[in-house]
Amino acid sequence: MTNNDAFVSLVDVSKHFGSVVAVDHLSFTIDSGEFFSLLGPSGCGKTTVLRMLGGFESPTTGEIYIDGAPMSEVPPHHRPTNMVFQNYAIFPHLNVRANIAYGLRYDKIEKADVARRVEEALEMVKLPGFGKRRSNELSGGQRQRVALARALIKRPKVLLLDEPEAGLDQEAVGMLGSILTDWKAGGRTAVMTTHNVEQGLIWGDRVAILSGGK
Image (cartoon, rainbow, N blue to C red; front, top):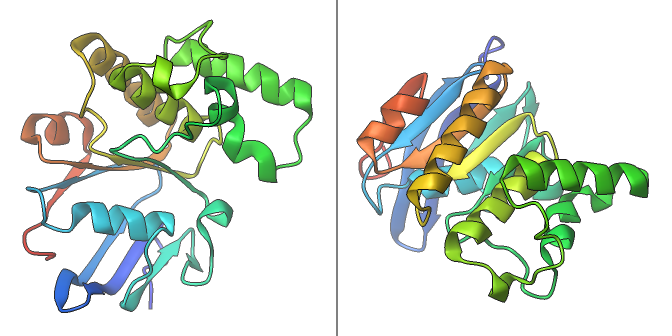
């Protein structure tokens, strides 16, 4: 059963990697338009939770619902989510423009509209003119900005952020804060993992503290 009033529900979700229990019978709900922070140290299970929400890991037991629909059989590219990975996960063989537009390839969008949205995304993350650069021509902070632009361009119902402040310089952290503030102001839903208590409290409407996958 899922909470009909909740936009995101985890119902008795566990994740095992062999004999290791990464997530242990976890249940919680997230409302539409809520910014939800998962706070805890490395190894507590928060990234595994985020990857299960995005479809990159499957629960060993339990079910995840988004907007009332069960997600077990839904692959990542068909879910109403987009994820910004801690390790950026941008494609080295593609330039910045192609990386940002990558998620739109499954959508029936005119090329001109794709190009416009990519340029808007580049402006949003303060990388205008970087469209033709390869990943090896970017700093770590710039790669994180590209990953953020790639997630935002899809306008997901749920934005997933794995330690988004990691690897960013002070200017980029300020830019990220501005983008997330606008995201919240637009009434959109986001889930963020962090070990930074201050960031979790600043951005989170609610904070869940994870320890040992619970």
